[in-house]
Image 1 (cartoon, helix red, strand yellow):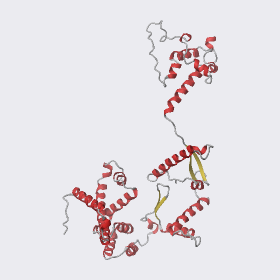
Image 2 (cartoon, rainbow, N blue to C red; image 1 turned 90 degrees about the horizontal axis):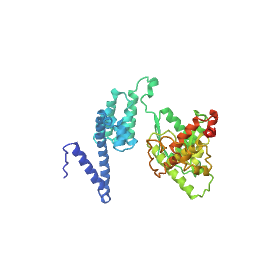
Image 3 (cartoon, rainbow, N blue to C red; image 1 turned 180 degrees about the vertical axis):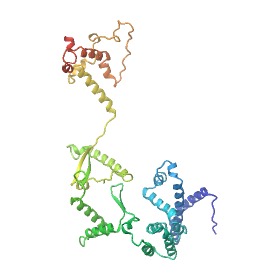
Image 4 (cartoon, rainbow, N blue to C red; image 1 turned 135 degrees about the vertical axis):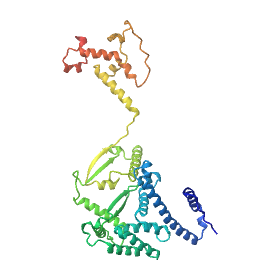
Length: 435
């Protein structure tokens, strides 16, 4: 006979719970009879129902105390995603169970019994009873729980709930009849760029969607082996293609569709298609964009779809194409490039031709005797000190080629140039020596 152990507090209860679930996870279930596995699955479903009640109550208290804000998060859903490492969809389900503890106490009590309703059924009943007026909602949920306790399945519960909603509806709802309806459609993308559609449609929208899908999903013949969901998928794609080709969509930028086309740099060059280097380059960038596409599937993106290959070429036939050319920059070469630019500017200011390598070489070691001396460079003047020896640094090599005294000498020649201001740049100040 098994004696249940009662934990002393919640901390000990959580430790015992993890220990028990770890035992079940590591058990040798391959040797267990099928009757025991069946009973174990039913027991786990009852445990899941009770666990949902505990989670709902904990989340309700956590949200009431602003636990997410005190932990540096903006909302409870964000806290669940970043702290417990669940997906956004799972966090939304947890918050739905939290709503049971706040607005559906009768359903929460039925879920606590473990065997009356499961978590999924309780969440479905909460969604169905939400449009019922608040003064009748607890009574309606009590009727549903009583029927579930008597053995009613989900189909019977749906019929009972619909009848209760019809009896408790307002006599003349008018234009506000759909104020309690949940309307919305979401399109999420997976790692491979495939889409997942979730939606709650109004009766009118559902009727139109059903009519369109039925009209475009007819089997193409006896050899059509597609299932109904596959034919509905193809019908939805065909409906979207016809809508894009009908010229009925708004055109904010002159075209109904805007496409951001990312071209590989190798495709812009006329090279051998069998080049191993080019194939490796293309493969590397495809892998990088696959990572960007995967990251966009779990975060807020720009609302666009990620396509490549023939699917992308077909989608942009009627789109406004904005070419985006990307490339890699070598940060190590930036400083060398700046040094070359400064050296080029120094040659131009001294009136030398940058393309004349002989002239450039002759300026590498200028003759100090031929240049005007300043106070700092004249040894005969008092206070003169020998300059420190030059350090053979690659970055400062250009500074030795054009010392500071030559720049100051050039500045004095510029100011003393007798030529008009418009011609001083061309002569470089050399006309002062001739004058």
